[in-house]
Length: 159
Image (cartoon, one colour):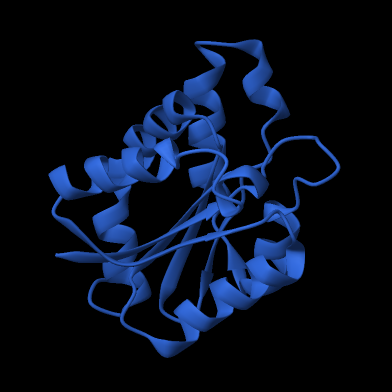
């Protein structure tokens, strides 16, 4: 079983003005994948809040994958990639490339997405877009590699 933290980054969801449909999609996909969500939070699109939550969850241990949703576009308040880059020690560009490639088959706008994936200590951090359809497509694209990635990060398997 893989332990998961879901971090939704959305001004509207954090103010209770909108339901977190993307977080629900992550929860459903990961439960079918034998993932157990042990942390869940919603924060506004503010870099310091994102950094704080990612660092807190990764540093306390026990979470194999932190999956974020939202804040990966080109809008001025979309700062999830910048926050993630400050938190991780190593990036995993193959996940980001795979997600963009999959979504490019659906829309040319996928090339505007700025998801970052990386590792902090023994936790994989994966940025997903904010729209539910994009979340599902991206997560399904990288799902086959997630178990092995977690095993390698935890030192349970070799590359």
